[in-house]
Image 1 (cartoon, rainbow, N blue to C red):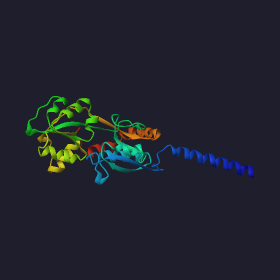
Image 2 (cartoon, rainbow, N blue to C red):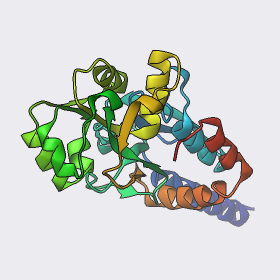
Image 3 (cartoon, one colour):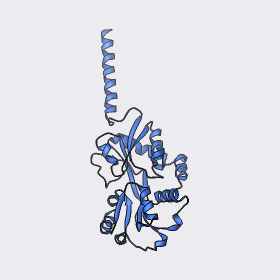
Image 4 (cartoon, rainbow, N blue to C red):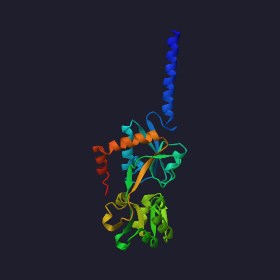
Length: 255
């Protein structure tokens, strides 16, 4: 009886040790079925903070739900999404790429892309042929634009007579519509959504979309490589589903 009890005790210790080893692979904020994720402030239609939804959040939540996780979002200024994950206060950070501070983190496969453009009012009749031409004009752009849009854009921004990067994208759109700047540099879908909200109808016929930039792809940053790889697999499966196609249609993307 003592020998059997000793074997059971030994097996129990091994079993518990394996469980603890598995759990220790995740950040301190990860529970059995819950993850916390940092995300930049309001970027409708991708992130609609007041509803805790939007295309980006709906997609990420659905993928993690298929993996067996519920998700809570922690909103921070865009450009600081990696701050919390660096100190392990969250399990992942959205909208990250290789140009940002990702030391010690692992990036997922691209999960979303933004189509940034330089947008001007048609009535101003501004003509430009290249990114460098922006240097002669006033510009308001999204936060970290000078980091993610490349060297040519960064040089043009430095020479611009007025260059601002604002976290509040509604304010960016307002500045263009009121004629306070020549260009707003932002994602086409975000401009369409916000200008529609501000005016009450589509404003796309009244602006010129200067497609100067390639699509910018973004990743999710993780501290745990196993969780990142599991997300990649679940994302690949999800993007083949009807649910994903319906999500794209729901938010009426222009590209």
